[in-house]
Length: 516
Image 1 (cartoon, one colour):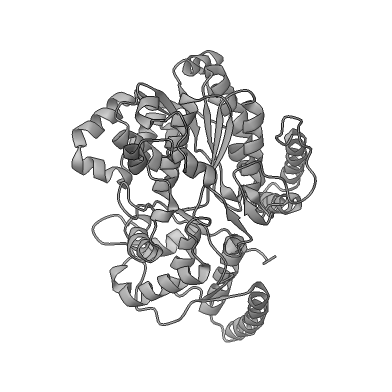
Image 2 (tube, one colour):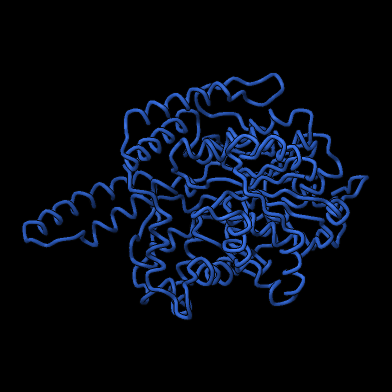
């Protein structure tokens, strides 16, 4: 690959710069923040807008409680604790702010003053709940871009917008690092290239208000808003509310940053870190992990998927490095809009059947090593079936379970049977995640790899982005399973809490809905 005439440098670009980073109470932004602190020591300041917490906690109080204590900083705590403490105290600036509100909820004067102290904006704030009420997903994933681009324009600085490869929705085939066209109902395209989503947003907001006017009970209202979001996403060409609203966020970012520097970074399915700050670091339950958790506790044993389909998994540290490289480029060459995809399916594809086989073999061979996942040795196999077979099996199971549940009630037995619990868990997993295990496209990342080539060999090694570094058997079995057990299911106290898995799984899954 030919090297471009002008080389780039993370250290040069970010030296003395003030980086505004959103979303640091979430998973990915923590990995970005840790890498900036550890690998870019000459960055001047990192500004963190954090919403006020429960009990009116300030941004700084939330940072100290939810971010600074994170295990993502364990490597720095062990190797350079004084430096980490100084950085937190002197170069982390926390602002009590809300990105979903105009001016971030600040006065006009404070918002303008904030803009004078920012050199680049990295927006990693998002709701990654695939089935969130439409009003909430729309606010954080789309409408917040009005306010974020307003800040970037006022500061006259680049914006790095973190999106997802799955904004490609129901499209099929080779998905390149370019604008995504809707696969469903028509949406007007602006002459400048992006899609004009303001009219669509007005329609969605009108429907949201109709639902809110019709349903006053909070849980029922949220369920109706969730159903509305899924219907509208499907109508326009997306599987779920998350990807639909993230696509709208891309359009608003392109509109708001017309004539200014904008880089959109789209990761695929983000899972635990490959190498840094430690192999396997993860926070919360990701797409594949909910299925692993359900299998570990005997709550499901089959799932709809294409065994020969390629699933696009990317470790979080490769994503963070991609973001940092894109940020350096935008600072050194702030002249255009760019799109990068951080993915594995082009250069290092792994098939779903291989992933399941590797994980199942690891679980059966080393289940005792995963004390927070398994209470006993797994004896059942996990199978994948095609969509048609899955629906037939679910219908047969539902009929059988209904008869058994009726018999239990006649005998006076209370509570939900284990069979019904397995049926509901399997159904919910399928509704939530099956789109991602029935792949219909491959994500290209050639532009991202070309970007990496513009950095020195030293920086390219320090900020790796290439998925060809991954050995899938080693990553899935040794790295990811250990990280899931150690970090995602981390219990309080010396011994792991037995209820941790159950609580984590319950939190990861929305209320069961009909399989589409």
